[in-house]
Image (spheres, rainbow, N blue to C red):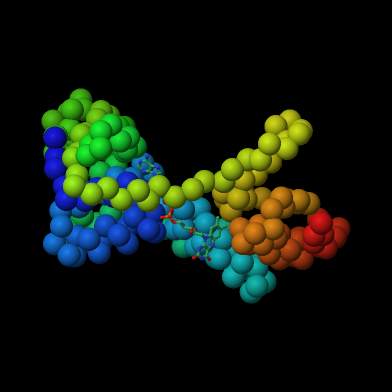
Length: 211
Ligand SMILES: Cc1cc2nc3c(=O)[nH]c(=O)nc-3n(C[C@H](O)[C@H](O)[C@H](O)COP(=O)(O)OP(=O)(O)OC[C@H]3O[C@@H](n4cnc5c(N)ncnc54)[C@H](O)[C@@H]3O)c2cc1C
């Protein structure tokens, strides 16, 4: 069982920032991340979305926009981000965390993810393989973010739909689109749709209807 002053659960923008600052203050810190270090912003939201908007504002063809999207998201490779955390003194533990006691987290490691000290997986601590790692902490930071919610709308389950994440990683331009939700994320989606529509000869109307 490995003991830390602080465990940060979730390695998105918030978790990475907190973990780096706390480690800089001299505390022992572990950051637990189930997916990619950097979280939504780097791979599923701000960077790819703003990249598509920029491409559209420059009038770039869809193929170039897709290439830029892949470039800004680093080919979904978060190893540099993990190394930055390590250099800052943060121990990165890949897996899904579950609080099992007021001062304890059990991390179920993803297949192939390195084990931390205290691991009970199929390989020795420091090796790789699936299994669990138990961490104790003095303080816990929960930075697990959010994910798109699918509202309970009659009929929605019977049709194909995208969440905002699907829209950002779309492989083709839709010929028509309805955006449900007019907040900041919906506005990003409308902006991308309008820009794409204007450059897509298959689209008959580039009007955006707000109801
Ligand atoms: C389309 C779109 C565009 C946006 N554009 C902007 C913008 O231009 N500017 C801006 O400031 N913001 C923007 N945002 C908002 C921004 O992306 C979020 O506010 C930010 O990413 C939230 O960061 P976070 O660290 O709180 O959460 P996340 O980035 O979601 O990180 C949480 C992490 O926790 C991990 N996790 C969850 N549960 C567990 C668990 N049990 N164990 C281990 N790990 C776990 C997840 O895998 C995830 O990586 C945009 C959002 C969207 C959807």
